Length: 196
Image 1 (cartoon, rainbow, N blue to C red):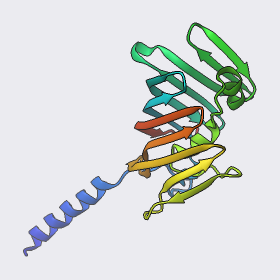
Image 2 (spheres, rainbow, N blue to C red; image 1 turned 120 degrees about the vertical axis):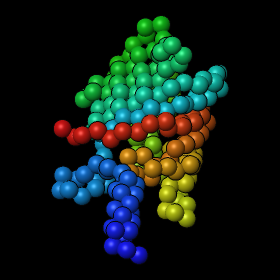
Image 3 (cartoon, rainbow, N blue to C red; image 1 turned 180 degrees about the vertical axis):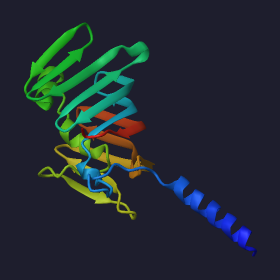
């Protein structure tokens, strides 16, 4: 092989390698941040919610920054089904017909307002394909080491269709069942945001 062809092959090879890299968030020291420590993100997903009374298909927009979050489920034309906001020590739940409820804790607010035992704090880990570390949580992994099934406080959760989002392997689909509530989440878009 001539010198020019070797140089061209090397350039093409480097271009392909660089093109395959995905920019991951960093830990501030130049290295990639671990998925567990990334707490400033937003995602968009399709959700199906099933209760004993009804079934709903909707869109989920979820933004999270540390312990604060904005969790908005809405239908066609932007009609809100539920909009849960936790900011500091105040949680607000906005429902159809301009009903608004308040509490210090988002999970307690959901339970008092809707009767749902919904572990939104744990879900913020599960959505990334991570166990939450809460007491009583049991889980299994697949052959690739990815979270496959999990049980917690009456919830049975299955994780599937792992894909790479922002350089991390995370589940594209999560199905969660509880005696009073069923939830299916299909992730459409993930974005990790700068921490400042």
